[in-house]
Length: 475
Ligand SMILES: Cc1cc2nc3c(=O)[nH]c(=O)nc-3n(C[C@H](O)[C@H](O)[C@H](O)COP(=O)(O)OP(=O)(O)OC[C@H]3O[C@@H](n4cnc5c(N)ncnc54)[C@H](O)[C@@H]3O)c2cc1C
Image (cartoon, rainbow, N blue to C red):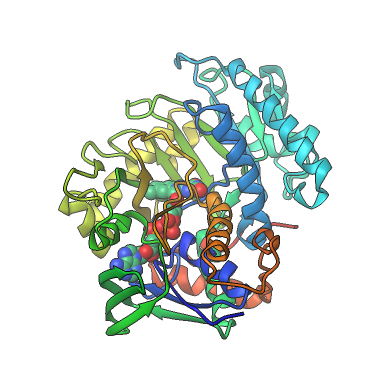
């Protein structure tokens, strides 16, 4: 194996996943991250194992999300919270709940095929149980049952929803689907510990790439902060998230892309009974009836999204690149939030709106309170279609990989494509042709992982319980 220097800019999910794949192949990697901790970019809480939160995307994207999510869960089992998601379509919604079933059946068949071909991919349970519709009569019966401490069946998971959801305001069937939760603090912890244990991986935290140039011989990179000086790279991986275009601009690469700022909110519902599934109330994006998302964490914390401009979205939060720059320019007040955080007043106001948005369907939830800082950030969307949910990596110059994932589950396909490109470019040898398909093994003692995850949550001002799982991965 030749020792070639590969530099990755950005230690978000894309950057750390690329570093884990390359590092586990023995490749010498330097990872630059401008922040002090890894995986500090926009949040993620949902494993989109079928894309059922997005009625507007096509079947193909949903099938890709299913396959990629299973792969992601195999790489990072310690971030997966194995609780299901319940999808409700409100009575006033122009769509029909029954219309969701066609795609769910397609996904169930695809999952059954995957699980039959390779049983190690059957991470969503029995294929026949991938989703389960619930009619109103069943919900009324479940509403009379007491919640169980550790739900085992689809029916037991549904009890808290049946007891608190306004059953008049939703269409039937309600759907329960095996789209699990993800814990971002545990990903930062696990990936950080695994990379720190690899002698061939150097992590430069608090280090920002400020200039880059390219020639046939490779890349010259100037850095500022924790490491201040020049680096040379034979191969450059741009995993800079919503700032990907800044590096394109430095290298003279023109590309169309968008950047969107979004926020979710941290609430606490002290009286929450037992364990909850995630709850999605569908709605038209950008209107006052935009989708509501209720994501449970331990100790009564609930993360909330409301796809309205008053809650998660903002009127000026979606921007595009221009003729002269590949980097879309977000208005200054968003960059201010990303760099310095939110004012207490704005945090409280938007969190209360989010609570009210969900309380339209869960009346008891109006008792919830502000539980911590928002989970927020800007994400990149390559091209010109803001509904795109699957994207991985492009190679616009020789030896230059530009990562642009929209959902975290695309990170494993992205990393494999980069490994294949490195083999194609002759920069790594000595690995078998099928090696890029292999998954790195992350073996971290659970206690060390939980401790690091809690430290990360505390260092960012979040309740430490949000670094724990409600149920756990179990695979
Ligand atoms: C509100 C919200 C909710 C979301 N929910 C989900 C979800 O439930 N499920 C899901 O799959 N996805 C979700 N996403 C999308 C997900 O957050 C992103 O797809 C993912 O975080 C992108 O990872 P990344 O590594 O590409 O970018 P980032 O996480 O942004 O990483 C890029 C890193 O590069 C660093 N960097 C940038 N420039 C430089 C430089 N010049 N020098 C050094 N370092 C640099 C940054 O500091 C950053 O850490 C959500 C996004 C938002 C905004």
